[in-house]
Length: 530
Image (cartoon, rainbow, N blue to C red; front, side, top):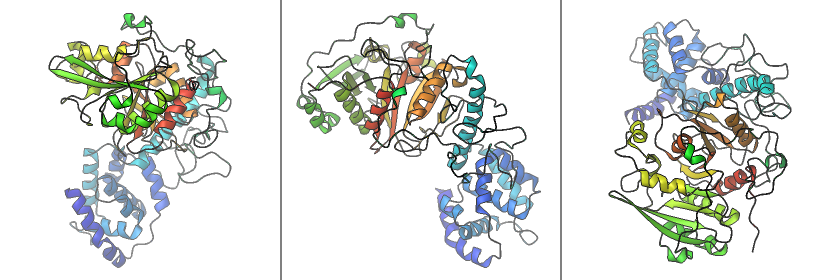
């Protein structure tokens, strides 16, 4: 709050002071380029060194104030207001000899070292992820012959894995501009006036060339069919006729997971629970909202109760009794309406079943986050710091997917929150795309695996396939040590089947279309109308 109040106060008087200042016009384009390349620690080094020219100092200070919360994006973009805010921020120091004294720059450097994360700066985050993708796509082109994956002509998909990049060919990669070459500056190294990140400065586009860091165009517009070469990937031969394998299909999916050999035994699909009736028989806000869809598709609903210790779990199920063999969806949060609606749409169009926690339309159920309760034993629960394991709840959810080839979930997230494709951490790697209709980084497909994606050819192939289908993707590397007892983490540690979570921002209108595109990409077909 104090930072917000200070930023408002600075903005109020910034215009007056900037008008009084005789500073020359600031090169915002060059400073924007520096902002995409320099992380907070490198920025601190440059500020502390105090050897920069006047323009460079002003640029570094402006970026520092933005990342420290003392300047808004709107202030940063307005040269007059930004100059005024910088002058106000430096006013406690003696500025008679120099507008930006060394002691002031040193103080900013100390603050930046105490706040090393730059992923709160969206411009830097996007440039960083794109740089990692270019490095990986260059490496994957070189290594393609050694991998059991057929990479399409022209290169790999929109984003890549984080691996060292050899020098690229003259033409660069198929998507994302020229490949990094020796001698080209890398993120974190400040160089003014020299295009970096393996290509022209951000915002500069060569006529006829693909947008730097962007994906290849998706075939068709919103609602367009998935390209034919992607339609047969991962098709379940028990449900759909076999067809030619697409070029990007992994050769080893699903992998055998030695942790839980008993889960490898395929079991018959679970029978529909008794008492499955029309939508009017279940009093639930999400079911009421979808009554027309449920009735129109001939779906049935039921309420399920599960007792585990002091917790009395309740769930609602929506299923397609005419086509029970379709995909199964589990939704652990009761406050994610768009996800529920998309799952009902999936059951109506592709058959199968969806089950959702049914509480008070809140994220927690009886004080428990249902997506942080997947633990069969105390050892499972220990890394997650939860009070006790939930073996009955965990077994119930996993049994929903008996006999299925894929494990599906759906969630909603907040705009600009922690779930985004613009992420690159030890556990999560994001591969965003910018093309409509799914170009918002909050709309993504979440996948997970027991190995880092750079070491997992199958996960890399899945990621590329989903990027080619028009999705942003986040891959989660799960180990027993970093498990958070979420659904995705439990699946990786105790199952062999691929996990797909369709994430969309609260209020988004694209989640049904995302479900359609994902299922088509995986080889599912809409059920025939009766």
